[in-house]
Image (tube, rainbow, N blue to C red; front, top):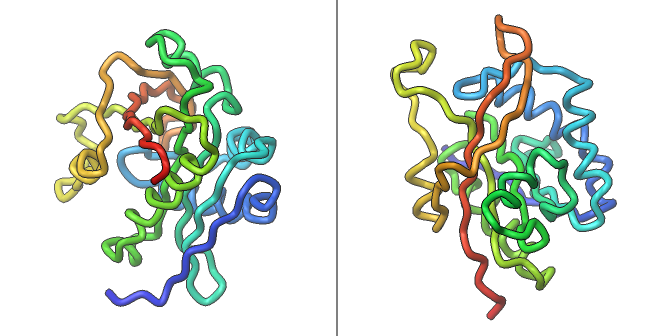
Length: 201
């Protein structure tokens, strides 16, 4: 597919007008496997509140004809909640040294156009420009390989993440509840992936 999309970069206070767009995309994209998220406005407000409060957060937005069709987020891990920081403390990594990547959510029709790479490129560049981080990191939900809800044609992102230099860290896991389709609130395990952040050239 040929997409006439553009990429916009918004930092700190600039993200505030885009919070509703990111919430909308999170609800739409995370409804699918593997998150099976039943959209919840209160949850979205609480979750995105950390980004709105951070002076060094970043939103990378993919747009087409003025509409946000994809979003990728990040903030200093020290600005996120205790639940996100604790696995690093337990793993002897100072949260002050980590720039955390939140979601990358993209509508299905626009996948395969290179937007995913742009999301990582811009967030890594943002973290590098801040000049004090040793790591970039994100987490992904753990699902059993034999979960009957897994679509037969599902292709995970693990190969893509590894090609970007990220390594899954078994044991660096957090617990996070959200409303799952048909289940109500369920507690989920999410494991972190890390990459050393090289200095700016």
